[in-house]
Image 1 (cartoon, one colour):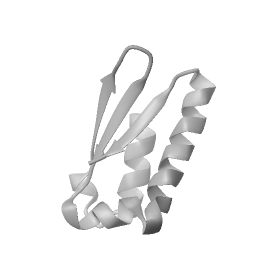
Image 2 (cartoon, one colour):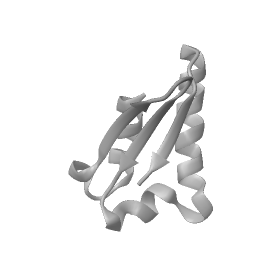
Image 3 (spheres, rainbow, N blue to C red):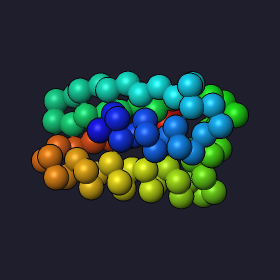
Image 4 (cartoon, rainbow, N blue to C red):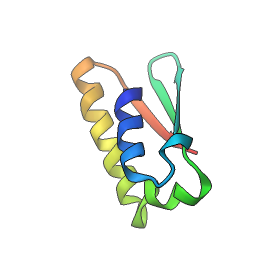
Length: 75
């Protein structure tokens, strides 16, 4: 999941070197924290959160194939 999120984020932002992904495992789920540069935050979130929602949808579809529950936090 981390590679997928990182690939998508690096494709969107102007500063791909500042993209970082951190995985945090909880009891029943996995939380993936995506961090980008401050000036790229708007590009990752998108208008009305459409890009962020699309990223979460793709990740949830990939996670469903693996039988896991993944939450994406954008910081």
